[in-house]
Image 1 (tube, rainbow, N blue to C red):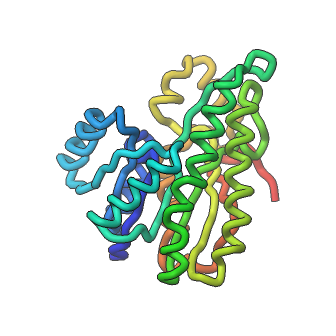
Image 2 (tube, rainbow, N blue to C red):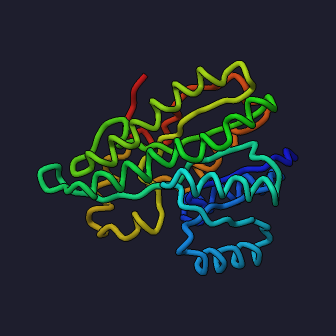
Length: 248
């Protein structure tokens, strides 16, 4: 029973839901962040999880806005106490080849995927270092490691997340705060389920373990990295991709 307070951005999504449940299962107080305009949907999500026995808190926040994340963290600390664990899971895609990509496609993806990591982490890092404990995990992507056709914006934002991870890990290492990245491969969520079956089959054929990952595969990795005893792993990127991309 850790009884730490964990904030999961993008917490009401498919991957975020698995993360929230896994952290709650070990006794953490879990808060899922959602977009302000999705408050109704988030309330339904919270009620569904309550029916499953999970008491997950929800909070509205635009993680692409520095000011709104500051407001959100002040509100969280007032209602639930300080944030011990931060999972930066919020992300979007706006796929197009670079010659067809417009400025908004680039800016929106970088602002949400990478900008949010700065915005939210900046609000909690000082408190973590002052208290001598913190666990930060940034959800990157296999496509941030290997690149992907039609995703220069997404791949750049996800690669940037790990650069952020390595730099902050060095700054916080002696303060009891670890900072790591997790790079999922293709995970079975509503997003990948919307891919035509023929295309999905081609994707699976290229994965050495022979299947797409499950959200729980990522959630279990995050639970390990955020455990109190996982204090000697920092600045690392953990690939969870079924062997789709292998490197040192």
